[in-house]
Picture (tube, rainbow, N blue to C red):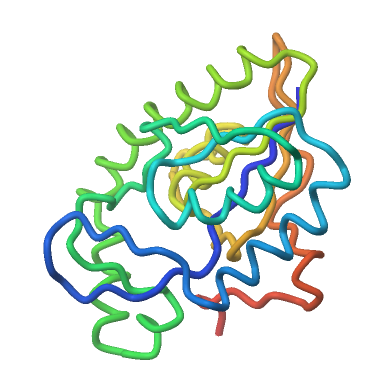
Amino acid sequence: MELWLIRHALPIRIDGGDAPADPGLAEEGLEQARQLADWWAPHGADIVYASPMRRAQETALPLAAALGVDITTVPDLKEFDSHLSTYIPIEELRADPVAWQAAVEEWLSPEAEEQRQAFRAGVVAAIDQIATDHPGERVAVVCHGGVINAYLSSVISLPGTMFFEPAYTSVSRVISGATHRQLVSLNETPHLGRLVVPATAG
């Protein structure tokens, strides 16, 4: 079977408040979600799964509608930091050098990596179960950058859990069989009509 692992589109910023922060999509993000559906739905998928978080659900909606299927929600597809009261898109975070440096130090800390290792185990179990439930089918899974990193780092046997920055609405494809999993593509964004440069580059 074939998995499409899709990162959500651009969400709005939430600076504190009642936890957990669960932003919906920005206007640009809504357009990205439409572009995703327009490009990828004609290739066909049998079912759409999504994280319960708003940014994933709103990204999945146009794709599911174009495919004529419902969205199946899986709680274990939530992002690693879904409990936080703040959500700042990485582009905005990087624009503040002090906040960016603090975030990078936290992400790269041994304590954070230890927590992500446990997070990866849950993500891998959830996505592998989806694959097991849909032999011979093509399945779209709309989720988050941390979730995609967690799963793909397992697929290619990396010791760490974070190794790349998925672009908004990027698609990474995996073939999953009874005895192996194979990474087919990483971070595809042809639907956006431009080359995407990661916010962490440079």
